[in-house]
Length: 142
Image (cartoon, rainbow, N blue to C red; front, side):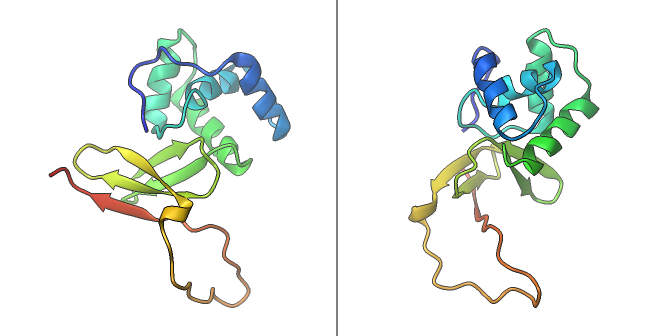
């Protein structure tokens, strides 16, 4: 669920603690990105995050936001959701769950993991194992 505006920010101390628990150095810019991203359950693009960080009065480049998001993803702080191959959203809810994606509005809505039942999974290719299942159900406004 995306929250409009920039008024809501995660407390700085909470963000620093989250980063340090995952072995991420809490630089000023990483903390600022984290304050936006970890404010509430939401799904934001890198551009939306950049816009909100800049609205805080921070000085950060687009490249720094992308690098920070990649680092957060690698360290398990966020889930990266690829939509249609050319759109990515970042989800601070890392517990297993799925999503509805409204193709008309661009909104992503969480679906609890236990609300979706898969009867079976195909065997993974030789030498690999299942890591995570991401189901994105595309819907349209009616």
